[in-house]
Image (cartoon, rainbow over all chains, first blue to last red; front, top):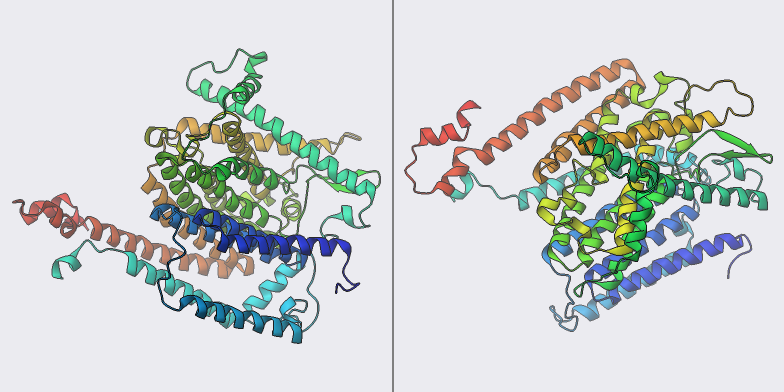
Length: 188
Length: 408
C-alpha cells in the first residue's frame, strides 16, 4: 500500500502520530475518569501536531499545541475540577431514549462519507494547498508567511466572519453568565 | 524540510552531524542542570543578603554545595503517596512540570555559529521553523504539571491551588503571546536564530529599544505570572493554601518540582534575553581563536541579570491578591499589549500610520477606562449596597457618600 515515494523516516513518523492519535481518541471514550479522558485528549492533540510537522505545517502544529492542548483542554480540566465531576459516571443509564442507535448511525454515515471522499480525491491529505493554486507549500519558515497571506487576502471575509462570531460568542457568554447586582433585581 | 533553517543539515545527515547534535543535547542538558544548582544557591544567598541574613554557608565554599546536600536529603526521604491520590497522575505530574523547561531551552541561541570539523554549528540545540512558538506551546503545556499535581493529590488545598494556577496561567498567556507577536513582527521571522541576528548590529537594534520598552515590560510581568514566581505566586501562597499544589509531595517528586521551578526561571530569563536583549550580541574584542567565547559570555551575563531580577522581585514585592492579579492581566496587560501591537504594526508601514494608530489606541484606551469606571461604580454603587444593608435605617445621602457615587 505504501508508495515508494515515502521514505522510511516519514512512514515511522506517520505511524507514531497515528498510534498517538488513535490510542488517545480511544482513551477519551473508554476511560471512565473525566480527568484521564482529558489527558487522553491531550495525547491525541499531540499526535495531530506531530502529523502537522510531518506535513511541514509547523505553524499549525504550534497553534495546535498552544490553543488546543494549552488552552482548551486546560479549560475542560478547569471545569471538571470546579464542578467536581471527577467521579466515575454511570454509563449504563441512557438519558435520552434511542440516543445511542441514532448516534451510532450518525457516526457511521460521517465515517463512510470521509472514506468515500478520501478514495475519490486527494485534497483531504492536504498535499496541495488551495491558496497557492496547486503549487506545493514552501518548506521551512516560508510557509508561515504563505499561510498569513492566504488568511488575510483570499480568505479575509471568512476570517473576519469567524472573528466576529467569536466576539459575539464571548459577549453572549458574559451576558448569560453575569449576574447584575444593581437595578435589575429590584425592578424585577 | 529542516535544511532551509539549520545549516548543519544542509548536506544531509551523516554520522558526524548526528554526533554533533548529540553533543549539543548533552551539553545543554548538563549546562541547564548545573545552572539550576547554582541558581538555587544564588537565590538563597541573594535573598538572605537582602534580608540581612547569612544564608547557606555550611557546605562547600560560601555554601555552594548546599543544593547538593538538600537534593541528597530529599532523595533519601520517604516517598509518600496520599491514600486519596490518583496514583498514575500523581507520579506523572512532576515530569510534566519539568520537561517544558528543558524543551524551551533547546531553542535559545547561546552563542554565534561555530565551525566544527567543517560543519557550521549553531550554538543552540535546535532551530525549528516554528521557532519562538515552541516556547509559547511549552508554556501552555507547563500548566498541566501544576494543575494535575494539585488535582491528583486528592486534597483540598492543592486542588484550590491548581484551579488558581490554571486560571492565572491561561490569563497571562494571552498578553505573553501578544508581546512575542510584536517581536516577531519587527523581525519578520519566527526562528530564534533570526530574532537574534536581527538584533546583532549594536544596542539600538535590540528589540527592547526598537519596540519601545512597553512590550518588554508586558513580557516580564506576564512571564513572572506564568512562572508563578513572586509577586504572582498565589498558586503556592503558603498563608492561604498550606504549600500550594505540591503540599502532598515529598522526597524526590518534590525535588523535581523544585528543580522545575528554577529551571523554568533560568529558561525564561534566557528567552527574555533572546527576544529583547539581542541574545549573545555584544562587544567582541579581536582575540585570535577565542572570538566565539565572547558571545557566550555576553549571553551568560545578560541571563544572570534577569535571574537576579526575579530574586529581587521576590525580596522586594508583596504578593498580589488573587483578584488584583486577574485585574492586572485582563484589564491592563491585554488591552495595553493589543494597543501597542497596533501602534507597532502602524509604524512598520509608515510613521504617519503609526501616529494615526497611536491616536486610535489612545481613544480606545480612554473609552475602556471609562467603561471600567462605569462597571466598578455599578458594582459598588448605592443600589448594590441596598439589598445587603436591607431595612437598616441608613438615609440615602449617607449611602451615596459611603459608596462614592456622588464623586463620579
